[in-house]
Amino acid sequence: MLKWLTGRQPIPVWVIKQIDDSLLHLCGQGVIEPNVKSSAVIEQLRSGRYEGAVTMAGGGLVLNARLFAALVPLDALQLDEQGHAHWNGRSWYVAQVPQRCWTYEERLVPQRQVFNGQELLVSVEDVSTIRRQLEESSGPGQASFEAAGDKEHPLIAPRGEDLSPSDSRRDNRTDIWRGHDD
Image (cartoon, rainbow, N blue to C red):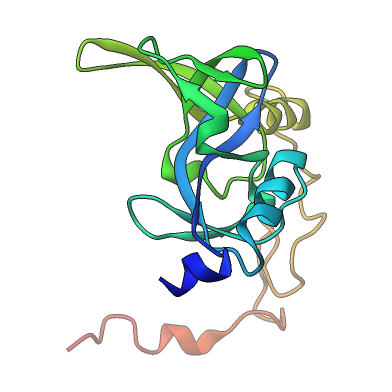
């Protein structure tokens, strides 16, 4: 009751992780608990200037608004039966963003998945830049080896050379216990 009197009612919002050309990566719904009047926060939301916390629906996870491309008041975005969103005078395809991607700060890409016989778009992490960097760093099946003994530690015996008893690196004490494992 006190929140209603002070004008600080919780504001339900759609949480959009990423906006592509014709696709919204939609996390679902969230709630903003305003510290100032709700009308001021709604104006910040509409202009894209809101900074603060958003509580995600269904689990109560509280995240910073900077993780998302947009927080849209519920009445400003509508979903139709085909799963399309209508927002800002446009029709958008929608990809559902799983919880593991809510805090992911790189690019997301849509992936088609079938769920209960219905095809859905699900957002996944775009790892193409990582894959490209790995491919550029070394070609497939190639390995780089240094010249023999180039970077070996001085206490490691060189391979292929016989050690004489006078070699200071040889330790004869290891021969004492051999054969006496009782």
